[in-house]
Amino acid sequence: MVKIRLKRLGYKKNPTFRIVVINDLQKREGRPICELGHYNPKTKEMKLDKATALEWIAKGAKPTETVQYLIKNCNEDGTLNYQPKTEKKLSKKALAKLEAEKEAQAAAAAAAAEAEAAPAEEASAEA
Image (cartoon, rainbow, N blue to C red; front, side, top):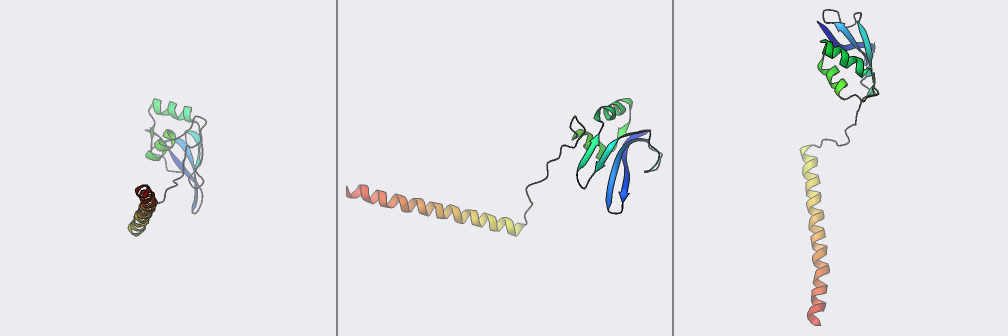
């Protein structure tokens, strides 16, 4: 059976991968049938021949989960369509503190609105 999978390159703690078509009985760094591109997970840099990858899938090659994700999120020019997460996940304490601050701001805004409305009512009552 033919698979599309990642072939690990690079040195210790700095992996880079080649996206290859290979027989599933071959070892991870074995000789590939075809090289489709490369992927660097640290910099999110990727170059993939998407048309050829889709041809191999049509012929019956099975992509691994990671390669399937990369093909799905690949632009037509072969680069990775990646948006870094801008929102950080907060702890329960931080969420409670943030919510308390929002409530305090809302209460202060309501008090300011009442203070502005009170002199206007007094002025209209005197007239």
